[in-house]
Length: 302
Ligand SMILES: CC(C)(COP(=O)(O)OP(=O)(O)OC[C@H]1O[C@@H](n2cnc3c(N)ncnc32)[C@H](O)[C@@H]1OP(=O)(O)O)[C@@H](O)C(=O)NCCC(=O)NCCSC(=O)Cc1ccccc1
Image (cartoon, rainbow, N blue to C red; front, top):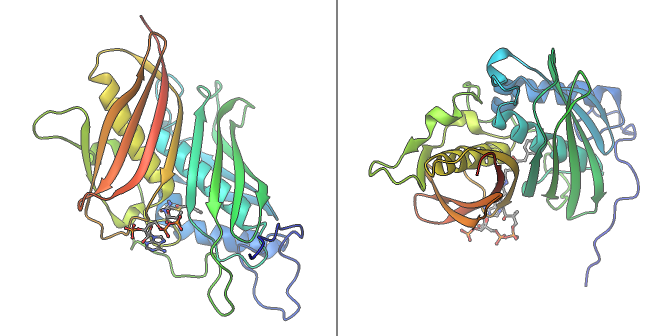
């Protein structure tokens, strides 16, 4: 049986043939410039305002200016900002650690919500680092702080590493997907339509080009953000204030940009005196599930 090869050598030494720098070529200064250029045209990262400020093999730093509309009155950062930057940072840290990586999708992502930003915070800082990678898979983490040093969230994730094939474009070489529209993290909740019959367990949303990742599929962070919206509404319909603690998503199938409508269906897994856990299945219009999300919150009042 073929053995997976653990990646011991950091990728990105200068190419002997002098070929142009590439975002996955993490040790070359020009690789950071290449990554910045890619994120500047990626619909989700452009809409959120995500910029890469540091890149080395297995490590990336992303920064997001905290515009007033991205921070709630209680200081919590918009959930889609947290989910998309965590997914991106973990993906970039894993793939920059795999020599010649073609990239690969998120298999699982868990985000722990810690709390609001500090007084006067102006920037969200997302530090991604690889934990392990080999030629098939990689795990990474992201620590999300603000520029006053306050921890806002923490994430861990598993990425698939697509098989390396000679002559196949590597991570980030494809043209910018998704057309010209940028993703609006604040508007995500408004895109999600309630069930016409008033069932709080069901929520629908039509896929748009602005939700694209660098691979031309719906961004893992957007799917997680959609599940947050569904779970917030489901819990609100049960009349109790809940503070979100964590969300874990298993990504079962890629969602193409022409997928049409996605449907979220939520149910309680735990409805305890202190904690509620809601499982949300995100399905395509043909009924096939694309993601399973489990969100846990702590009740704020009895
Ligand atoms: C690949 C794997 C994770 C595992 O696969 P396996 O265990 O080997 O399972 P299997 O091969 O059986 O496939 C299962 C089903 O999947 C389908 N399918 C598979 N591959 C393809 C394909 N290439 N194209 C089309 N379909 C494909 C396949 O036909 C089957 O469907 P079916 O039963 O026929 O209807 C798969 O579950 C998957 O793609 N999940 C979704 C991942 C995802 O969308 N993550 C979030 C976005 S990533 C992101 O944004 C990160 C980022 C952001 C920013 C910056 C940087 C990074």
